Image (cartoon, rainbow, N blue to C red):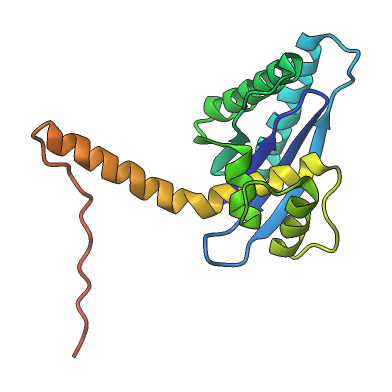
Length: 190
């Protein structure tokens, strides 16, 4: 599974691509930051971020895009910018038919460090260790993007099973029997 993680930010939008499957060593394919000048007009900044994300999608061809879910903060201006960049990332992926997953900061921290209250240094250290890097990616936005991708790789199988269980339960409540894909039977020679 190849995942592009996006840590949305108007000045620095972290992007990172990780490939692998849960339970196996992961590989970093790329990491960086899409930057915009803080004195530029909002529309121009969003277009610049769109172009940057499109370049990452073109270069790395991810199967999934994981974006940090915007959460409430006291600074409404920061939340608005983050939400707008999140929307740009979701739009870029959806336009290409790439599934998008949203993960909260505490989900990402818990997946990568074992605690949802980890600080940026702890996340950076664990990303460095998990991806076998020489040093933590800089700035922290880049490390956070990689952490988002790692979180998605590790959580996707469980989330898929939950979604299938919910769909089966809904179908049962509606009086329908859900169709399950045929599983090929393999004969074992004796």
